[in-house]
Length: 122
Image (cartoon, rainbow, N blue to C red; front, top):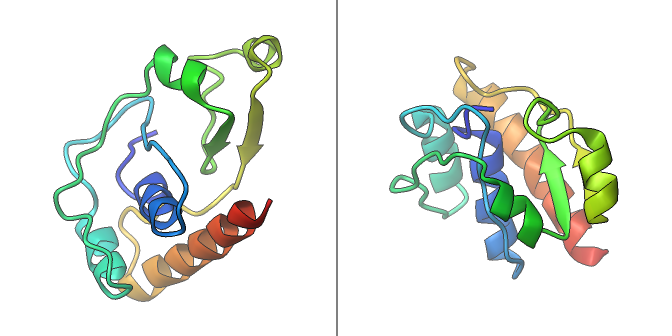
């Protein structure tokens, strides 16, 4: 939704593991959460210059898989549209790191990295 935490981490890990990924949200905030930036720096990944972006229909047109992070994009794109577009839609149902302590953000980060690694093997 805000594109300020989970999907920013997922995009960074996807790129680290050799995949092409785009991170976007339906209601982007002004900046990536500082705790997320800090947690990713601990993994040697600098996302401090990343900015939240708005999910655009053409992004979906170019995607082979769409992963949501515990929030739905059904308000913007009805489920039947995904079926028509023959896109795979997956919801990872992750906690939002907004306002969470750094130890909790680290747990979310590590869960995302594990899922991205699994995805890279598929």
